[in-house]
Image 1 (cartoon, helix red, strand yellow):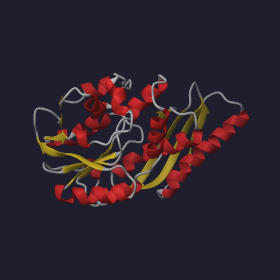
Image 2 (cartoon, rainbow, N blue to C red):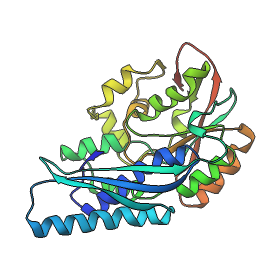
Image 3 (tube, rainbow, N blue to C red):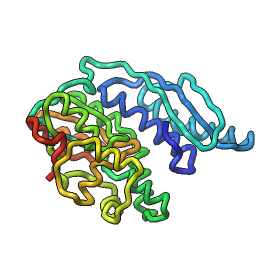
Length: 275
């Protein structure tokens, strides 16, 4: 479920669908079916019908294009607009979200970081309009095509959502006595996010994300964005180093802001290190 962060039912339906599909894509699975859970604010009957129509239209465009169907769900009214989808998928030969990365693997990220910081700034009236428009456009872009390309070579994969990049990376490497070594300058960021982070703007989830990871790195605004929770965030994949450049080039050709942002190392004193 996501609490509404934008007063456009169609766009919010689309972004929430993409957010929900992240786990399926990270598994290297094929989306199959979705159930909707919708809580609308108190609205007139006419507005309820219009909002539901727009929500489902935005979500259905995403799910149908990915080969999945919305097969049911539930709607109700409450204090605020929230939306969620339960998604099923058909796993392929390797369940990438459970697989083990290896030391020396390259880390590939398919979307920029910084949506949590930008949304926190927007709530304060401190974000630039062009930066928010750019962020929403990328958040509303599905990445099933990128997932297919990565799944062909990836040893492990996850989607970057509420725990931030550092948190999700740590959860993938720590169980295997490995660490993630991140090159800060290589990470794609949403325009405006680094400046806002430098101004001290943080998502409410930031502090918990920071405390959950054994981290070694500079205390810079760019480093702070490693703990920024993401909505409809990118995929993070551990791939053999000799395939990383070709995979990144192929995904960038699809229109995604994809980059090699580091590599996997043997266990160190930290789960994630940034340089």
